[in-house]
Length: 205
Image (cartoon, rainbow, N blue to C red):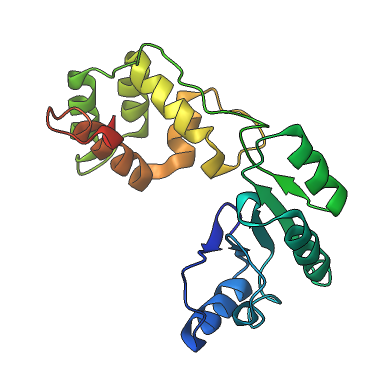
């Protein structure tokens, strides 16, 4: 709940089951977002549940946008204007009271080229072998990972990723191994092993 937003797409039919499921997710602490919102009676049932409402600018003229925002301001929601492509659109949405903004005007995707750091096959094999041992030695795991710069880099990148929400940067391999624990290290090592297969999907690189 602290890191995931549940988004309800515009093509979802608002049934009793959907409403019930959203209520359960809300009770568990999840943030709920409503995508590509347009004024429609079918959404009235879930407006009290959602936290973020996304407004797609190209789908509304200025009058529709103004009326929609005025209506939604009656609810305790964060308004996100998406597909903002000009300074004028950004200014107008800001004036009307939108809280969050997305679009090419703010940032365009960039292709970043660089050399990928590859972990050695032998280092991964040794790591998996150590993990499968009856009595796993944390110091041994730390030693195997520390000997390979790529493994060390990948582990520290993992432990310092947004998924773990660390307030302080972890720069010790031993501490990273201890914090992650055996189960997560096993999963991580398995993914690294799969990424070495010649017929792997691109997502596993």
